[in-house]
Length: 140
Length: 483
Image 1 (cartoon, chains in turn red, purple):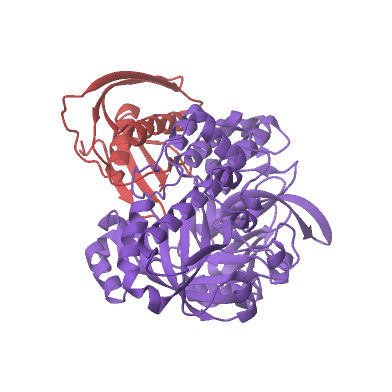
Image 2 (cartoon, each protein chain N blue to C red; image 1 turned 30 degrees about the horizontal axis):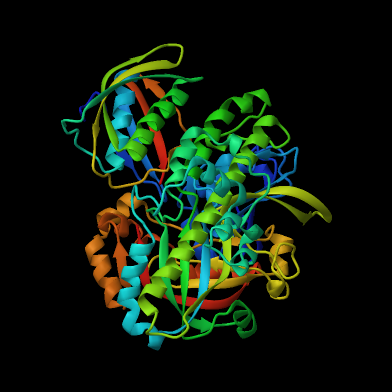
């Protein structure tokens, strides 16, 4: 997933964890942020499994930053509570700060790190000529 | 960025960033630090975060920061902020995601020499009886109704279940139960996460430690607390688990719009807040109390399980091993307290984020035995280094809103710690020092390496020199259990 046009990198933070994610559009930015979060959880491979389930989620927020947090929290909750790792099959982000996602989830056996929360700390999706980028701090 | 030149020295151990530093500051920032610690503190963004916190509406006095401070999200870790109750704001980010993360210390009647042959077995038993690690729940799942009782009644619930003694409750901050907890303000997801995790340690920097009481500096206070040189003690550090994290996430989200409704301008969205006399503020206070009570109960059940672990190893081998609670204190919490500020008694909500309450002698809420000496203040060091038992002072009541530091404080990022320190090497070096380790993850162990933290002795020396705590005893780790 980590190509020039979208991806993520870990940024040093004294106590918590921070990533910078980027993408050519909001869709690839959101996907890159999810990849980054799963990376921090200690999950790097999307394994095909027999127990794959399909789900659709719809989320609404007041702005794109809020929408990004909702999206990541949703994936994080299902990971930590249900041990379900979701692959984002289709993602549609609308101008009214809503999204619809088609997800395919696989049961996982374990993950390496508990992320307590996705924080709003200095959260600001930046737009430039090349696309979008955002720094996200995770409380661990 | 805040630099060294922005700080005005008040005393050798107190510094101030005046309100003139930034136009949106409402109160100054007061920092407790030695010259040595100041070098480390100015390296990350923690002072800028303290300045951000100083912009919150309704602050009653300076935002304080403790010498173990480091960068967090929103508030700095080590931050203390008092807002006028009820018209001032409460900020979930000023309390943290792990609501009522805290520490408790239990004193044993086991002499080190007597316990030495059993330490390996005790480590194994603690690891078995006290579930820990990523994604690991407690030994039993409770119904939602029962989880509601945990939230309503905290350690009192634990006593009803046979997990606590009267003394345990008396020696827990607030008696182990904060009033005003209303489970109706908790989301279904928080319930879901909470029902399976009572009595579990979690991962990250949480731990259970068997310590040796290495030195006593205040024999009278140590005697009252039940601490004696050469004897073992037990520390438990953890919080409200997934339930608390979910409560904070839920309210940080829902308060995003409240900020606009109440016309509050913030430099960082992680500081979202609402006046306490609004429906939003009241709802968060009730939900936070639920999570705080859950955490008190969680540490109490863990204590019960630790007592069972000791019994499983020592019964028939040792006569009386004790394990009586010295104190249980929160270090991520918002508390409604009355403080003397500017010569007036004012009711405030004291946000302590990575800071410990440290009430001096004669303060309310202290059990009678601690009335004369002041509240026990527990300052765990980083893994493998000393921990300290201090006591609250009159100075803390006057100058730090009855608050003190909560630990050593990080200086190195987790990613750097993991790159520079191998978990296996660290484990070997700690074992060489005679420390027994049980850890769920080697990578996790490396992130918590002593080199990633400040020197706890320097941090403690600072609060002692500043007069906001007095030393009672120093503990040395013998067994460390980590998730």
